[in-house]
Length: 303
Ligand SMILES: NC(=O)C1=CN([C@@H]2O[C@H](COP(=O)(O)OP(=O)(O)OC[C@H]3O[C@@H](n4cnc5c(N)ncnc54)[C@H](O)[C@@H]3O)[C@@H](O)[C@H]2O)C=CC1
Ligand SMILES: CC(=O)C(=O)O
Image (cartoon, rainbow, N blue to C red; front, side, top):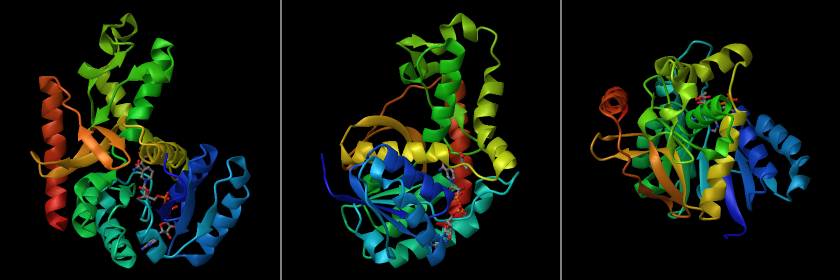
């Protein structure tokens, strides 16, 4: 286990604070450094979060962009969030400019840093961050559909009355409107999810739509989502620092498609250790092609 690691969270808004809080609650073995362009806001978050640091003796402080650039893990949450009804893709112009400014302010980067992109649209920003950072691609990845897949796993667990930890199922492709569920690969205890009688009359398209739309629902009710992604990022930090080699659906570059999108990967201390060879059904493959194509069209405008 790596000790005394530094995790920099760039962007100390709702998501940045939720990641820091989740890291504290889970006892992630690292010093947390929060960075933001709004000095008072980041100072307020650090003071507030430091009141919770006793739970696991995790230290937290405000830092500079230079500090962040030397961290072991750099998490980028800086960026505009969706307004009710707005898609993630609609954030691209604003968040591409913010990403560029953050990476240039942090440079030169620790060559061994793992950079985790969380700001949206996460798949496009991940591809751009891979180019801008100059870090090896396995060290730069996005949170992808980790959060959507957790939403899916909870749905399946509730439906089948099993523990969520016994559900292996993924939403894949874009962390956004074109994502799809790999139903053919979904298993509970090795048994295909679709073979359970509880799924006999389930409208799978409606489930996929509900999972993909859950963020919109939360944003229309309370303005933002942050607890779920906080938990996902703390879990990823543990996977990296403890080299757990967990399988997560993360946004990674596809040579075949020339874009980043979510795909099951093994994550450990060097970042993405491998992409899994997951077999999809014909219909799922078509959904993946469509998702990659829509991301490529956006990426080409910003690359
Ligand atoms: N990947 C995922 O699953 C999820 C992604 N998100 C995304 O995370 C991003 C952040 O969301 P929230 O924290 O709710 O927004 P927020 O508005 O609460 O926080 C954004 C923070 O970024 C800061 N910021 C802006 N420009 C900056 C710069 N150049 N350098 C440093 N900091 C800068 C702002 O001052 C603000 O504190 C959004 O793009 C949102 O869509 C949110 C939830 C889940
Ligand atoms: C906002 C966002 O990307 C989500 O909650 O999925």
